[in-house]
Length: 82
Image 1: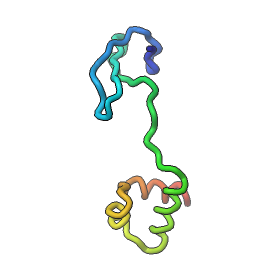
Image 2 (image 1 turned 90 degrees about the vertical axis):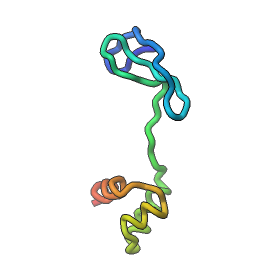
Image 3 (image 1 turned 90 degrees about the horizontal axis):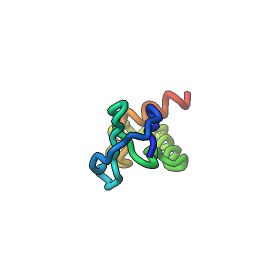
């Protein structure tokens, strides 16, 4: 295992994440890391569905309740689409 922040190989096991993946801590820079990190992203079809619902006059709070996506996320998608 190699720290992807500083490149050091001096890492120790440091517990588990909420979803059960192994967490490591670098002894050089002190930062925590995981093996094979994955980003939390929405697929494009889901994103288009949510934006279409917004353009059909659904409120941001309504989208939060219906789709379970945060208002900040929808707002950032709207800013990027303009």
